Image (tube, helix red, strand yellow):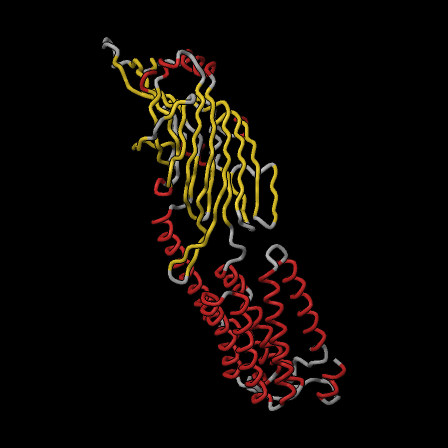
Length: 448
């Protein structure tokens, strides 16, 4: 048993166990990244608290109170029950111009915007007459309301224009909600319209943080949106039919029909519309491409792989140069490699990910390379190992930067590394404590 412990195979198994032990500090680093992400989310919530959060904006919804006769039981007179019916516009158009800036809370920042919105909607007289005719309840048309859903009313900075059939009007606050969103309302007397259609023109300024989503509350919805932001992420139930990117930012156009959503033009207050309305939102998120924490998480996913690769490099030097490296020395090298991720996280919050990565990688390469010179008792071997480690960090950065092709590149790198290790160890006698070849180690390394 004692002799077997001196074999190359036992050494490899021991290095494998040490590499697995390094998952403990890597998991701790992953927990630290999650903790910092939560702090960032709390900071964004603080920014949104005073500015306005993720915003949702819909078109005006016409809501008419109703009275319905309901049975109170056998041989009992009918009772009247109050309710309401909601109707959507025939056409809805929105023109949205977003002014974007970055707000900071401590060391954290988030994109915020002020959207200048021009909104036009038309309710057809034929639709109103048809819905009233088909209703099983009596309409109280003189008490109708137009309700405008706004995701976060704290961000409603100004209503610059509100006209109904060309006449000025004014919004009031309200406790009612459309789905999960609050509303501002304006009363409208349908009886006074004498069967006319309803044309609504609205202008407003809406502030929010990170995202703006819209509701297709019409038979036909047209939206034009533009913003000086170069990395928009189009989200929700519909992608834009057209979009364009240039030096000034992006512009996008949506066109949606009532056939593209899961609810109709008319519903009563007895229907639960929350899920259907939520599922129909669409819009844009001011995406920050691969932010600091996403990159740290991605770097951490390859942590065990690159620690193992470094251990393998040490092992090859140890075997081919007929040296002996103590397990504690492997652990110290692993600790330096794990520390890289802590340094990277701390620096990237302050100076950005790219520069932080370069500084942390250089520091670890210098430390490990210098340590290798002392452990392997060879200046050239330490410099070569430091160069290999630098190449490993360069490959890691390429994997982090290649968002869509990271898996492909990582798989190819892993395949090449496995093939290289197989090639370099092809002459090792795994039943002995040294290579089986009679050639000197230097000759083996040169020929490899």
